[in-house]
Amino acid sequence: MIQKLPKSHNEIKKRIAIFPGSFDPFTLGHHTIIERALPLFDGIIIAIGDNKDKSSMWSPESRKESIEGLYVNDPRIKVIIYSGLTVKIAAEHGADFLLRGVRMIQDFEYEKNLAEVNRNLSGIETVLLYTLPEYSYISSSIVRELLKYHQDVSSLLPPGMILGTPKL
Ligand code: ADP
View 1 (cartoon, protein in one colour):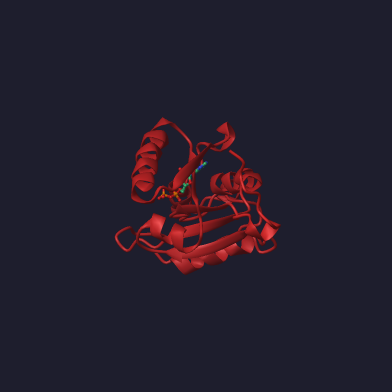
View 2 (view 1 turned 90 degrees about the vertical axis):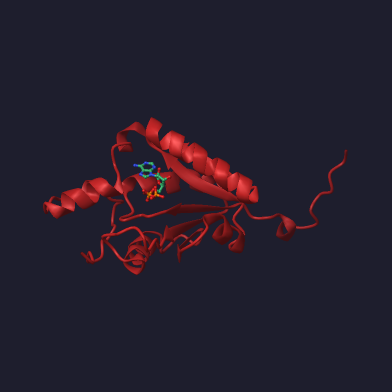
């Protein structure tokens, strides 16, 4: 079968991925996932989940500001705050892919179920990237825990990241 070629570049649909998460805060682990995923997509939307049932250390607005500061010079990256179904927000933003990261076997099982639920809901495909081993121990919860004890967390955050004032 001969496929119809697009008439112009404008007709080629952009490959947009949505990277949803709590990002409380956004860590070096998240940042490396973004950097490694950028060659795969035309654009990535970092979607901060505003989950009223889950307590967080930073407000969604503060998290958004910190992340935007990192990618201010990269027009391929957009940061949004959302609540509700991730697949719905993906569709609203024209994203055909969900981007997630996997650190260890526990993440894998959780991400596998999530990917299946989301595919069944809307047909969206999930792209999983395995974290580099040197970043696999980094998590938002470890950063929060260390901050409670006034420890330096700069090595766990993306270079140049400015954390807002915690709300707790
Ligand atoms: P959620 O509450 O949705 O799990 P997180 O902010 O904890 O949100 O994580 C968002 C995504 O980033 C998840 O897919 C998670 O597995 C991934 N992730 C978190 N930390 C790392 C890391 N160090 N390396 C790679 N991926 C990570």
